[in-house]
Image 1 (cartoon, helix red, strand yellow):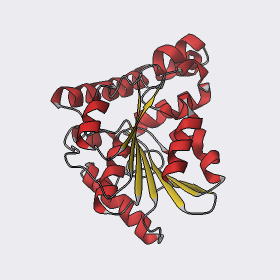
Image 2 (tube, rainbow, N blue to C red):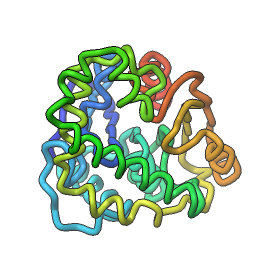
Image 3 (tube, rainbow, N blue to C red):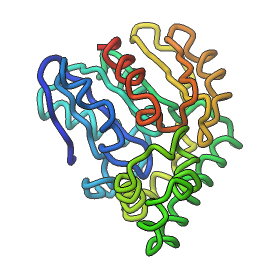
Image 4 (cartoon, one colour):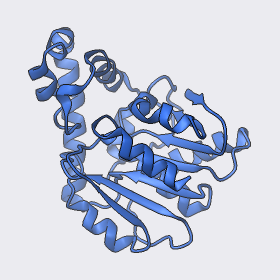
Length: 253
């Protein structure tokens, strides 16, 4: 799998969500790499990682990440995950592959309606990106364009870099693993506590993809975890509040 690797020290591994890429973690990477080795992955079929023909389930993606870690002798790292990557991180914690987990707005705490809503939102974002492709550079160059087009994922979309917005949408549209992962998106559920693995669940209270009310179920399912409300943050909080997101990962490490 394609990845970015920087820093030195005990490892922190970072996993993005559906349609995303390792660069979603860019706002926190240097903060983490000042104290740790940081490996941010492109999951199979996303970013610059080729599709592997797998099922696209959380379990399959966890298998692939576990193999990646084993091949590089990275034993029981801290694993951070966003959205779909958050579920993969929790699955790795459940298996004992991760020694601690920080999951940002993870999938797996929704009901059938919440899962359908999540699939609808990410599918609409991808279809809209494809339809508007010729106009995207001009639209992202404006504050209002970033607010309209990126507001579903970020709490403060106006502050985003236009070039990053364009690259993210093009990666979403081009991702060969998207359709398979989207079909399986609602299948994985976190149903049992993990009292032996330190877990932090962080949720933006302006999340429109996996709304903040799902954090209440996360508290019920994972009563031993640390639960953090990210004030003013959207589904992808790393650009909204990089300092807090980095701190949570560093504290887990």
